[in-house]
Image (tube, rainbow, N blue to C red; front, side, top):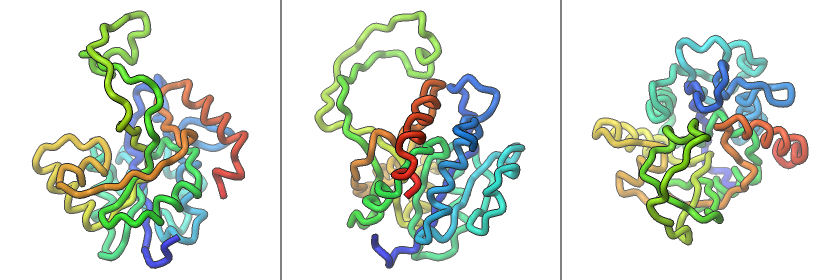
Length: 244
């Protein structure tokens, strides 16, 4: 690992996770005796290379302060925004050190391994890099938005076309960037009204080159109810690898 980099982790955790069909935000769902968020946080809290973990939570969040790790000396929390990009930017605003790099990680990715983080940090990419996995399935496009058909299991939808998957990757987190560069590009992109779905998309919009580092399929993002069962399987079978 590059020992010269000062690293802070940022966890945007202000979302409500409506697609989980649960009264609890998905980051607070129980998972093998802990919450999803606690797994996502502990990997960074337990690593000496990470100096601080900044969590962006909703100002109406009643759950975060009940977590056992809330009082951990590395934890700092800020008020999240209405979007992921705003939450990350709020976290970046409290970072003073201009030499810091940040690892931005989804609150609902509890199965990340430290081996993946190490490969990401050691990637020699001056503007930053992200974890990603190559798409192996055939990819179809339809004219309907996912937010419509995700809850319409009794419906069928016409295929518009099949996409060439050979150069397509699925973005994951963490995403790793110089804090000042990410803050600058996020600020500019939001001011320009650009839709930011992850941190890399802000840098791409600004014309910066972001690298892909291959991650593991086990680093799933809990989005739908069935994902929770899969995360339980991964954590039950690969706990030493995940927590190392």
